[in-house]
Image (tube, rainbow, N blue to C red; front, side):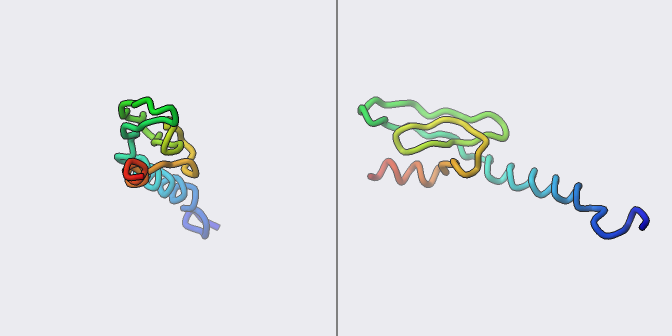
Length: 81
C-alpha cells in the first residue's frame, strides 16, 4: 500500500498521545511538604521535566513511573489525616 495506507500514522499518533498524556500527568504534580513517620518535616520540591511526585504520605521522591504517581490532591489528603 502507499504512504496513506492503514496503520501508517500510528507510530506518530502513538508518540503524540504519549507526549500529551505525560505532559498532562507531569504538569504541576510536584511534591508538597510532608512529615515523615518520625515526625520530621520535609520541604516541598519540584520534580524535573517529565517526572512527577511519587511515594507515600510519609516518603516522597520524583520518578517517571505513572503507577507510583502521588498527585497534589492525594498529598493534600495526607495532610488532613
